[in-house]
Amino acid sequence: MTGRLLIVSTLLFVFVVDAIPFEERNALQSFYTALGGPLWLKKDFWNDTPGTECSWHGIRCDPFNSTVVGIELPANKLIGKISTLRDLRSLQDLNLFGNEMYGSLIGIQHNFALRNVDISNNGLYGNLDFMQWENMVNLVTLK
Image (cartoon, rainbow, N blue to C red; front, side):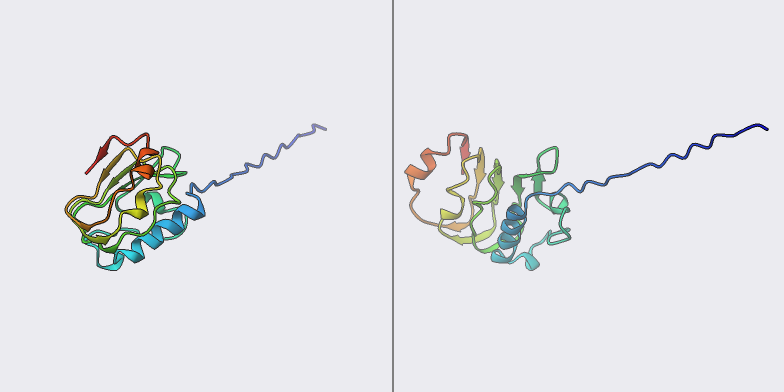
C-alpha cells in the first residue's frame, strides 16, 4: 500500500489600509466644510470613506499615504474663513491661490513644516505674527 501525504497550505492575506491619522482626516473635513466644499469646482472623492483621503482632489500625501504633505486647490472657488490646519503637522505645501477666502491667517501659522504657501488673490487680512512665522524654519515661499 502506497501512502500519500497531502499537504494543505493556506495563504493568509492581510490587507493593510493606508490611512492618514484621524486628526488629519478631521482637519480636512473641517477645512472642506468651512470653505464651502459642496460648491467647489473640483471636489472629487472629498469626504469619501476613511483611507481614501490621499485620492481626494488637491490632496497630496507622503509615499506611504500616511500623512498629508500638500493641499493644492488654486482657483477652486473656496469661499469662507480658513479653518485651522494645525492638525496637519506634516503639511509642507499649501496652494490656495485665487479663491474667495477671507479672514485671519491664524489658521496656518502653526504649521511648522510648511515650505511653500500661496494664499495670494484672496481676501485674507491681519497682521503677520512674526514670532509665529519665525518658528517656521522650513518656510521658503510665502505669497
